[in-house]
Image (cartoon, rainbow, N blue to C red; front, side, top):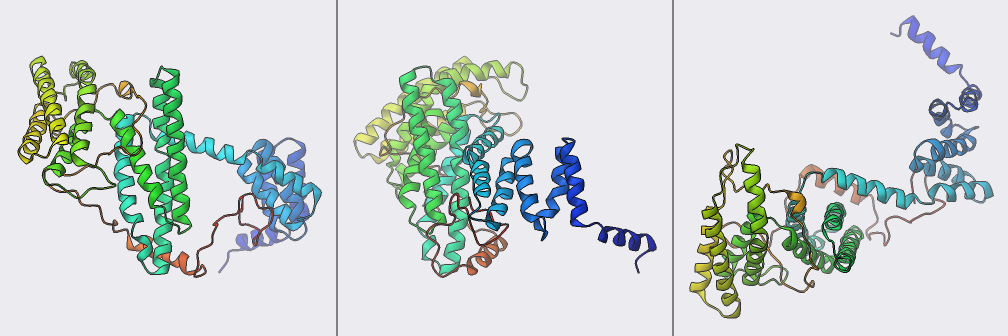
Length: 426
């Protein structure tokens, strides 16, 4: 049973008319109290008598003092109420002008914030693993029953779109590290093209189209840049995986030659090892979790890496199982000589990350690229990862509400009219 106070409050609330709310909002507006004005006008957007006026005022206030995204929502509501209105069309056009650029800037800022403190090599290594999973799943998801295939397509699309943001911090790191203007222009164009291709793959997956070619090229792009930025400990891990696959003649993934991959990672290791070792030594002097890295061990690693590169080059040029096995043993020996973290026993990977992306123009996309694998075990093309049944069911429910055929375009960009007063369609 309601208390007397609750009854009085309800009765008081019912006596507040839309006109009184409007007048209260106008009073806030006239005193430049924009926050209270917006808060007061917002409930009137869905009233019968003040909907258009409230939406127009809110569009102006949000555009000038709030969020342009919300300004576009309010301008759209007013436009749908009067699609042919000159003022409404002008306001909507103004509200959405530059909105895509604003969204992109926010997305870039969010990606950079999320990547703070992460070396570009680490970002690229994680991205490469993800794109290989996507590549495996994209080749089979459309063979499912229609509703499930659409749900899987939506899931893969979202993952691929998120993956495209990995290019953002990598691009920023490269801009800061490349001094030659011609090289910088070449690399940055390649990076921009790679991100555009990744987003294109996401759109195709969402539209239930074949995105395998785009994902295959994206995998090549990520791997090519990974080889340019990878730190020595991670390079050894990729080297070990590729050499193991070469020894057992594992099935290729995305057309790569495992022995060439192993050679590429050995070269990446050799190129970056001296600077990495110097940086590690400096950090070890102040970090008790890092073990000492003697000059003797560094010299031995360098000598073994030189021997390994020559051996692997010979394996690329001629088939020799014994030489491939010897190369695998050398990779293991080098890895054992690398300094270990006192806490977890893993090879140290800290080493002035800001200096770990001295990039040169990457190889063309048709050059072979790397694949991670556990030691001495073939890396089979990964099967589609089992996702949460709850997540799948939610997507299936969404898919069941659609027509049998997926819409050719999921969203109409910048439409000025739509089926719902609250749905955004730009």
